[in-house]
Amino acid sequence: MKTTGLSRVSKEIIIRELDKELKNYSTYFVTQQGKTSAFALDGLRTRLRKTKGRYIVVKNSLAKKAFEKNKIEKLPEGLSGTCGIAFSNGDPVAPSKILMEFAKANEGFAVSSAYVSGAYMAPEQVKILATLPSREVLLSRVIGGIQAPISQFVNVLSGTLRKVVLVLDAVAKKKGSA
Image (tube, rainbow, N blue to C red; front, side, top):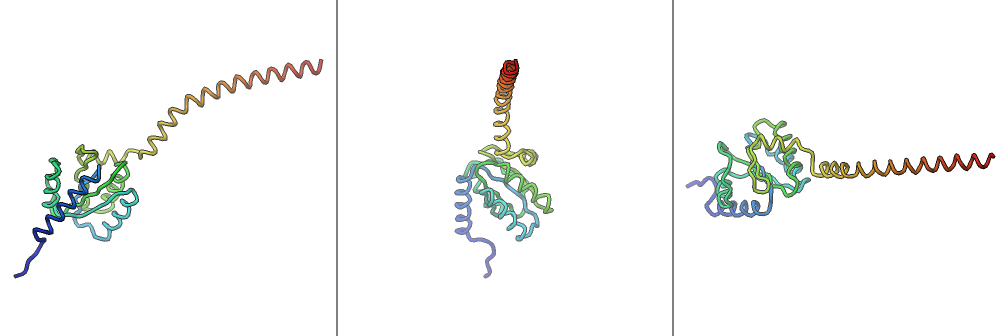
């Protein structure tokens, strides 16, 4: 008798590993990979590793069980075949940009949903997230906004000092020539 598919023990191990990953990462994206090649997915994994992320492919039924075990109720409906899950910690913008660029380049690949710090995000919200600047850029903008008034104040003070020095210099030249 020929058996196909995964054994019950294998499925339980996969669910346990998925459960561990869901607890270790604060952000994850559920994708529908369609007929994306393994070679293309390896490229995606490489790009996600640079952002300290991970991408795994798993059967929908096993993903649903792992999500239920973690009390994640809004698993995207309509997933068919195999789904992928991209895990990430920290800034969710970088992996969302990578996934959206990958989806544009690979027909059939789509981001179905995301969970950022426990909050559900629909595909439209993930697209918006991907358009945001990175955390570093936002921080530099905030620092620039804080620094701008201070630097302008310093310029005003130095201008006043410069005028005083010019007046004193003119007075000294006038007394020196008189």
